[in-house]
Length: 615
Image (cartoon, rainbow, N blue to C red):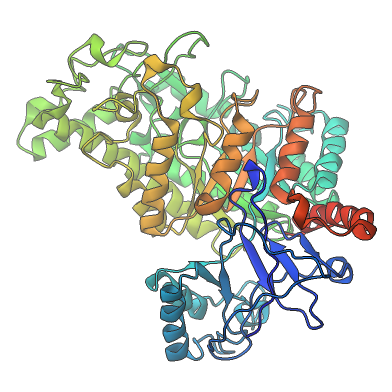
């Protein structure tokens, strides 16, 4: 294999995580292909073709020395290659026509050799004609999965393309009477996003809007019209199925569910003071026939089936991903922070949500089965209230707190396991429902970072994550995602430790790293969201840090389209952010020669947009 290289000088900070691949072109015309698919070299013809290049072996593994050629009489060899991450292409026929690994022993030996040589990873060509060979929607991944496992066992990485960028549509995109709100503004926004090179948009689909009047009576017309608008704009669509309400945005649960809740308050979560949380159903009723003789899980399943049938023409083409609602704000958690925190106030620890009659019944049975009936009377009596700090009562104290007692271990394990079982039920439902639609199922896990630097991690405990300084509470969660072949959506990728109040002992960066580590261990792919719709301080820089290098994610959804999003205070910054993800800034000694500068600049700029649209 012969390789020509163009080095790249140390460039500006935002390029510190770029992945670069190299290829050889006959005639000494070298091309450098970066992770964002922008090519630089002597010939503009290759750029016009839109072809992506990486190192690619064309036969069984062979080793030949790399050599470096000068280009155009002027050295393009960089002063430093510290940021170059080298990948080698696997043979084009690595997987046979019958979906087995070709040259398995030779590839295994080659992988070991590459690991010893210090190569970072390999690139695997995945052929449509091999995977979906016999019939539309009939996929056979066994050979590729086996080869991916070989690569993983060799300690190497698989090359992947740049992150797919989506933008969230307004939460009220569809009105209460099922019409498209702000239709002209949304249409203009879709065109702007397409021109900018964003891959798609995310659409929240509200249970209370679709199944508003009666169980089983679905009204999809507004959402279908909006899906068609997205399709006509040439964008992809990620759908979030929202089985919760939003009091803040005046979005309710279905009217018939609210009526049931008035006569049967036990379907909602209760806190210690008896205050109800009416924006989602208690997980304790998942399998109880509390909805006119049906269980919530049955109702959610029928809703998903209706969605799949109604949007069948969009599935796998326009609709590429579905996020399954799992709780408050769609996240897998208890509503432990029911009160909105004022901007000038530190977030309290929250409260345990185990006091509705059905949760108490399950707790009582569990305590009796464990031989400690007195432990089943309720949650910890010495825990603080919503807005209080960990040290305001005894339970969460770092030193001598009762969170380390045998009772606390019993209760916190039970409380966490109830949440994980709820996630299992809903993700299993979604995974089976959409398994043959060529879409990917996601679930959202919260980033509850307040008080993370304490020993007890109180905000995580009240939200249902038994995560402390001495116990990893995310292993079991990511293992559950892996069992259901679902990807994990993480918010808070715009948050940095630097901009958190010192008194909150918060660390979004450390928590994010912990969850991602658990995901890597169990083979769960991570996707991301930003948490602040109005822009966290240094948010764009932090997002970029979380999208590149070893942190690369499958999908990132930027929240959210609206008046502020397109305002002069925000949109220019967002535009710069998108372009920075998909264009390189070159050091002066890497720039094209003067006579090519104008044409090359135009080609790189336009191609990068086209490439991201096609990603």
